[in-house]
Image: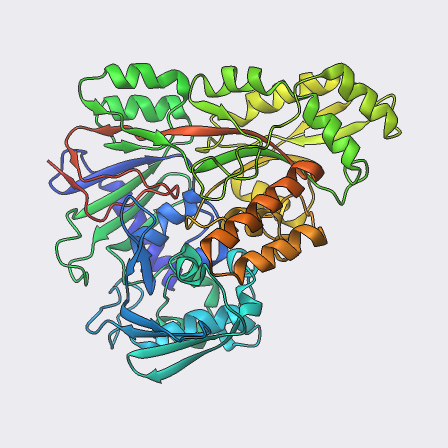
Amino acid sequence: MLKTTLKAASLALLAAGAMSAHAAGTLVYCSEASPAGFDPAQYTTGADFTANTFTVYNRLVEFERGGTKVEPGLAESWEVSPDQLTYTFHLRHGVKFHTTTYFKPTRDFDADDVIFTFERMLDPNQPFQKANPVAFPYFTDMGLDKLIARVEKVDPYTVRFVLKEVNAPFLQNLAMEYASVMSAEYTSQLLKANRPGDLNQFPVGTGPFVFRGYTKDATIRFDGNSQYWKPGAVKLSKLIFAITPDAAVRVQKLKRNECQVMSYPRPADVPALKADAGIDMPSQAGFNEGYLAYNVLKPHLDNVDVRRALDMAIDKKAIIASVYQGAGQAVSAPMPPTQWSYDKSIRGAAYDPAKAKALLAKAGYPNGFDIDLWALPVQRPYNPNGKVMAEMIQADWAKIGVRAKLVTYEWGEYLKRGHAGEQEAMLIGWTGDNGDPDNWIGTLLGCEAVKGSNFSKWCYKPMNDLVLQGRTTSNIGERTKIYMKAQQIFADQLPFSPIANSTVYQPVRKEVVGLKIEPLGYIRFDGVSVK
């Protein structure tokens, strides 16, 4: 009955016609992809987080707009014990959960909501999780399921996290998307109705925008939250996501003012957008990296010489020139140059097909082999055109006898199959989520992440020892030494081939006020208005 009512409401909205881009207080965002769902704990991509985390939800602590500094969120203050194992959070009073057609809260946010949010991820026997078992890739990738000993309710507005060991990036990790706080009252209602899966389709949070409807591959509609706890932060009455996978179509919509903000322009479109009198084009060095992951659990790719040969055979300069078109820089480390602890001494192997072919022969493959090469299906900040990049790598590998078959899937399916380890070689990438090196080294290369964002499925004890050491060391200087050593191990073993770090452009109509480029890869609309 609930789904029928929501579908009818959504169809009624569509029948009324798309809202005018000029309607007072309305902003239309041309996004590049449909979200996989609206439960941020289940996902790891910017497309999902823009559509759910920073519209619908809040976290105990949050990143400031346009930066990586941690500031109070649903917790207005906190203390850390001298041994750094206990974090006590004092919760904000008077915070309202959203009222929607499918849920009407009877109480304000309190400690019970925090307890539910984290116990669902910590305890597989927690009733809601047991009724609707889902994976929490970020939570497990960072080892938080093993780190957090318990989460305790001290009183209705105080919660305490007790850790098993020191964890240097813990506060930054709590500001990340997976930690968005859910309504325990709403989830209890869903559980009683035997509809726990609806949490991922019909979200309820405390954030700046209230979910109103989603038409798959078309639109997501939100209303501004008039009861938002942060005074003056919500300046829009309506926020609409117009899902537009084709970058050229997004550009045309922006120029015609059918949307006021768009995601990820193609490098070739940047000059024209800059020349448009009605459009601003702020840019900055992206906190990202595009790369080619080798699944080391597959035949051939478990051999480091094969991985080195494949890497050496890729003409990365040609890719950067053709795919990034002046908006990309070559990288050799598993993190971008803007990340503290980046080791600038690392130099990748030069492009050398002859040497690559000889290395393949040494590894036992003088005639090459067949391989599946997965092509990124959507434009991402770290890769403007996954199809063209894959075709160029395919042509490069053919020169050394490696016969690559191009494979792709819809974005959500691509990630799902990649997490499951179906791929051999896979184009993917990362935008940093919290400003800490562990978010690169641990999340992309740690053993705990092999079922998550470690798409290389590479569990290497010398590297993993450094991952764990880096998390339990507080001194920045010591942590820097640890992560630089980890980068040297990466360069020697090469579980993935770094391709490029890209410049991020954010096309926006000039009538939009207050939008900032977020270094962590998503877009936020709190604090944004339209003249």
